[in-house]
Length: 461
Image (cartoon, rainbow, N blue to C red):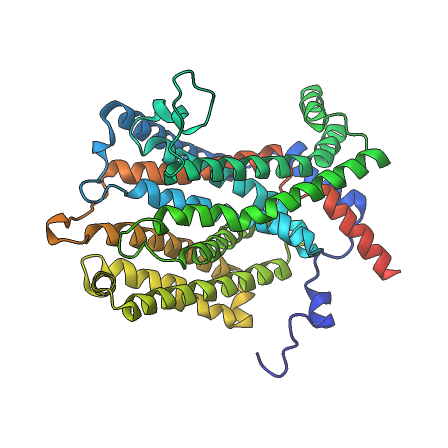
């Protein structure tokens, strides 16, 4: 940073890039956010985007239907690569969902007001990412109609799940994470649903939003119970940020496969999850603020803070890569050393070098104040990071399995059309849910933004 450039936390920069744009009142906040849902006509661009994402969702449905008909042989998995795109994509989607919980729960407990403009769609992103992730454990076994065996329901046959199986750990971790995230998201929505009910102009909208608002009238008793419930759910959601992806990392760490059997995976996976999650929040926030003119709500300060979090977690991930590399060489284990050689010079080495480029080298440009305040650059960087984090999961799964302990067990993995169709279909499904969410629910919390207006007014007095 140049000598003439004031630091980002200085009063001058805070005045220029505040948490909330100037000149807002309760009424202006309510009208601007609620009008997107209630009165603003649906744009042609929205229809185009929704149609494209719906098309990819239909492709996913066809791919899953064909999978149920023919079996997992339509994928590129084989012996010894029994885990392919399904597990890669599962871990990637779960990681993306972590930023929503971190923004909503942890930053709420730390009283960070800048989260207010981004927490609502970040929470929605979490739910949609978990929905995409949940598809893969269900279908990758090839027998989804037997999935109920993974739940410990009372069985007259005395059959219970194998609790030593990582698949069972995933079921409990993801279902708990999804349930708490859904409750946290919906409780935060209740005051806004009541606002939409009161501002709706048609009887059908008044009825639907009124039912969802659950009788909210904004009384002192309602607000007291709402704040207590929200705080409780934030406290419940906070440990899930650490526990869920740690449990998923155990899928690998408990195995004896070289490259998996390491104790660094839990913190390494959690940092990577937050890294990719904040990248996805940026990927959503930047087009959203542009399409709906929300630059005075999602300000440059929000984008700058998210870029800083992304940079910090990226450095933790880089440390994890280095330490994983160091431990493999320092251990003297010939299988771990051979794995390092395969990553650097093996048949999939180009994926590893692309991973280093996307996750370590290119994000270092975020140290620049000027680049962090370039919206187009931030959007492109968020896409680069998410690509890199997907490559990381691919490298962990595929390279470790293609070169096992004996050369007779070596193999190659080549994803098929149906692998790619399922993966791109989940991306389309995710985007489609986001399009629907923006049209039917407030993408920014009206109640919390009005609270921020009140606090700003008090400070100005």
